[in-house]
Length: 430
Image (cartoon, rainbow, N blue to C red; front, side, top):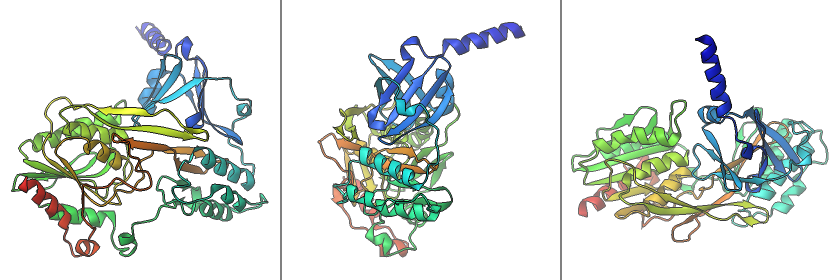
């Protein structure tokens, strides 16, 4: 029996190895990514004009990759598609020769000059929004040190200085002992009231909603039904705890079913994502599906690489199976609504009987493209443009509400939240 079991395991392993058509070198220029696949091993490299580093190496077993990393690899026509959990479109690779500069791809600390060069090149090749923020990136190269004799403190200062003016929360530097930095600026009302935190903002919103608040295990959602028959759902972030082997979409969809069942009798629903910084696009899609009765073409997205944008990838969202919350909806947004919460808003604004209320969102819709710098630090950057079904781009400017309501910081500090009551009144009057 042990021998038979071992043979069965071995057979399963080799059955799930990459097919012959998957073997070889594949490149995705929009992502600065090279993938090399052999029968037993897969390697992923990140490249710029001045570097090639191997970022990952793992056994080339398709089921194992999906189980542990939440990723799947599939050959489609003449392309190789890498689908990653949390992202709504696959990364498309085409066949290529293995780049000679990747022959020695280990992360090697060559000094501060090389680290700055890789940082500058990654931004130069993949960041499309310099003009939007009125930043002349070519002049930022002049900040580079002429000597490798820099401390980590001095190097971190240079990288921070180079990104100043890019009011973009997806431009990120994770610098080990030097901490985390983003050049994103807080809204003016938050700068003027430093005591306001997301925790306090949510506490006030939940208090003003006047609902017996319920939560979901492993999901940052609070919800309930008001005495007037209006439901309230606060989605604090687009993240969910998921069991091994289950995708974010599957876990979020399964958890949100409880909200759907508990709010079946609601006449209308306020969905509050004002202070939601984002998370997984897959979670945003899974939640939005429960508010749809028919498929909606929500948006398209395209990636930037020095020569221009890639072909747009069109995203259509289909209704979830079973009961739904196809009711009149008011979605509350603010300048702190970011990333995947903005993707959720893009989807919701395409359904009937939806009103978006509040202020413009943060304007940080793009996914984050990460580069590991030669010294081990991480650079994250925006590299995509999301385009609404009407052809609008909101990166850097935010999604506009249907009904603009100025943010009242004084009211929040005093423990009141007029926007929730305004939304409830709108639903009640309809």
